[in-house]
Length: 487
Ligand code: NAD
Image (cartoon, rainbow, N blue to C red; front, side, top):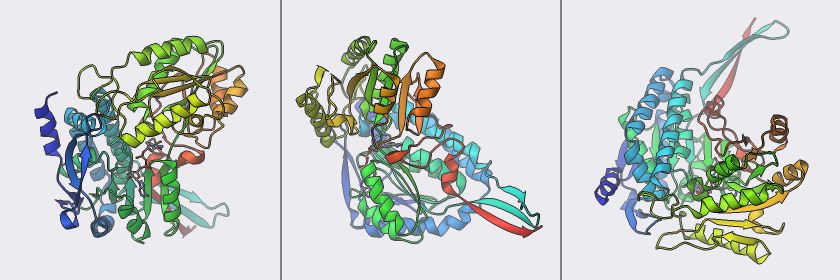
């Protein structure tokens, strides 16, 4: 892919904030820069919203809420369907843009564009299925109706690690349900979301339904909106620390909240597992997004009878990855998102090694001007190593071994997180026992990837509240109203 294609997709990103259907500069023409994490070069600038801009965005969302809620579900469905088709048609450009701002190899960006677009196809199908119930009260004296109505204006906040999919997982059901929105993408990767905003406008989304504000300081967006009584919901994807702060702020207006937070996924390999399949699953669960996924395998717990073979094969596969700018052919490992990410990963690896872990591969920042980190494998990790408790968010495989199933399940659950867990075994009853025993919102059995728009994605414990996707995903944007009638 040449520089001309890069320039073309960067120039196609609309300038400014999307408020009430129009793109315009931030107050005072404030801007901030977006950089390519593979080269540290500036890609372009985007608007840096002020509090006044943010309130204008909520004015726009609140102003059209009633009219939008009254549209025919089929009309909302058609907008989602057309957007799915437009994203599919423009997948190459969207993928290139995503790789430029995020760093992941283009093949991974393309997979994300497909995944992101699929949320619009899924929720286009759900929009027309919103229904209620009718019942007779037990005493027979009342008729009990329930109807579903949109929650109202929502604030959507997304992280940088999946610049499109984390947004479409919220925008899709919000449109399907009839909610209006103010969306704030992460400052590191706003370009994909700005491009998506234009695609949605082109697909016929009425002005004001989706407003996009980019800001360098996220509190400029969240604080005024979470205080404003017109806002009815916050849907957040990001770290547990920020999420819990936002839950506190949301308490002021008793807002509905959906929280997709951090993870610390255990990846269990039992004695009877197909080791080759487990290694393939591990490569996906660990290395997708360079290890920067909430679903990333953070701790490998491997039965001692297969630990040697599993570790050897994993080291071979990780050593064969080709690091570089994600736009280049043959590159299979992009950079991390920024210097803070490299420092965090390096700090966790050094801490483990200092405390006695064995380093089999990598263990330091990679070459080049970008934020690269070498694929790393650690074994013999002591209980006190910080990377067992923290979300590593990097290409680091931390391997421990176990002898008894119960020991593995107890260790897997020994975390405040509970997003996803993986288990590899050939025994169906063991698989069911383990799936039931793991404290997580999702479990992958003999697979390294669970994400699917048709499935309920979400966590337990400090990994979050609510589910995105699946048949329940739209419920996060609907209120149930009960209507009583004499029988
Ligand atoms: P982050 O919490 O730093 O930021 C997420 C978003 O919140 C960004 O848009 C950021 O600008 C905004 N934000 C940060 N501080 C804020 C504040 N004080 N007020 C309002 N908004 C604020 O997380 P990140 O580094 O962008 O993303 C990585 C984290 O996201 C990881 O913990 C990862 O596990 C999690 N994540 C979870 C899921 C999931 O579905 N559970 C999916 C992807 C990422």
